[in-house]
Length: 504
Image (cartoon, rainbow, N blue to C red; front, side, top):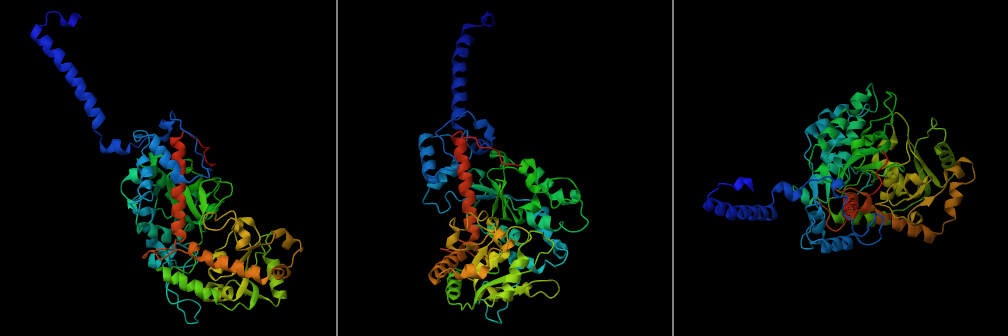
């Protein structure tokens, strides 16, 4: 009270009137003014720990949209705590064709993508990759002198071209947004597969192999968008197998780089052509095939043609032995094929390799009822997708060659579209492939082939310069799966459900 001693009465009354007015103004503007930064409020998910709502686990069977409706209804204005609620709400907006589908495309420095192609002649030690980078990564159009293909949509596509194909499709994605608050997911257009592939062979030390990955991490973690969920809402594509990105040691003799073992990237989703069964943050998507339709009609016409193929061979194998791999069953498979009059064998080797010709490979598959798909240099093979494209029922010998891999694109009931024969049965000489396949009735075979033909649209990547209208291709299915996964993770955050961190 001493501060008021000697103060004139008139000034005292003025002070009494002004102070409450100032407080009212302060409260009003804090409640009703919001800056752009506050709108998206890029907070760490750790700050939301005090919220506890009804549990929604990632394994829930209930429709994702139903949970979102419930959350939005119960919490009228949670945006101050959850910067992604605007994106979740957009799934309810049925008048917006992009509601719940918006992707934020990061603008990376060109050294992380386009600049790599300037040295396309040296991206591969044995092959000039410049021709494979043409046409948005599809490669050169295939000639059709032997009438193996349809008139449009066929290209000499490299099996490791997914970086280019997927990134170019994403640049033409119809639901891109520059508003992070609207993003259902964030895409990082890093050419991860091209980066690691150029250094897998040759005198490149680990510093060279890891350089781009480490620079990418430095760039990403500084972005405000990254801090929303510490990367759990981000994804990128690596058009190679996961093991190329999982070097476990810093030994110069160890394989690949360490992109997927960097602690900063343990939350990001990586789409690869072969995933790891022991890690939660990489997901297998189909290898690129030779077919990249621009219109729905091209897919439908191809499916009709596949149904009419004459198939004189009961089974076939396209590939080479792996004598350096002790556990490989390829040698036994080739021997069984050679001894059978019902098997067509296309052997791949060095020199003038007939397997390098797409028409040679596809002609064998088109004339076969079953196509043998043992492990290659890793669990999976591009050949499996080429054979399905030809309407040939795949025969797998290891679950990790397909069944535990492409969970977004292949049916869980693998017996509907494939035959499984255990590697051990072949290795130990307990099974003759021909006898096993002859036990299947014609009705069973016809049903399996029809399932295979129905799979074709889901396993091809459309031409990036076009957009299929009613048909969902491998790109569409992959993006939808990522968006659904991020939505579930976000709902878990809203509900206070804390998940275990992915293994590093």
